[in-house]
Length: 315
Image (cartoon, rainbow, N blue to C red; front, side):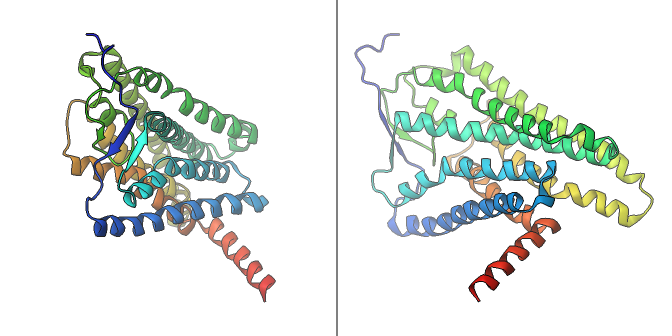
């Protein structure tokens, strides 16, 4: 089929936001608070880990890297959402849409890889405590973190480069709250269901998620087996407390991601698409600083120490 006589859309309009001004402002205020909390909370975690030498361990370096990715992950979408809520046009250019998809998916995939690496770190720390310092060295920790980021940047590139070549000559109303693969593909002037690359990419995405889940599951199966062999209840509690934050973040993040990207041929209504997208793009990042600061004794003590120093300085 030829598209030479058709003009490809260079701008898309988000159509999933509330139509009334009152509802838009009602959504804008909590979303602005959540985004501010995510950025400030993660910056606090990064700063505290950097300023306290006793936190320069693989576990806290991984947490610091995760916080860094969370800032970019949310910055890829939430500022555009905030601008759309207060704008009548609610538009984004094609290039801006492709860039948003790349940053969002590259940081998201990097987080998936990093959460898997963190599970491996906890497995070594609990199941092989004597060998842990010699295996999980700062060099290996840095290599794993860099490898996660490289994997995240490379994986979405082929699909985004291919989408950039598609003709968008029909409606330019994007039924979503940010740019994502499926909503954008629905606007293409070609039958994307018959294109083999889409099927291959869907399988690759599913394989990435399922592999990460399986590796994390196997890590925690080994961890639980070791914890159950600890005789004292206090020892079991301390061993498991080092994993509970990571496990909670994993369940929050992967639960929402699985609902959105492991649907295969299933379709959801616009309401559920939007709700699930808010779950993994906004709510999961919102809870991460809370989980890692409020449930972590060392980070809480470091934050209290620096707050005390700031109070003494101003008094």
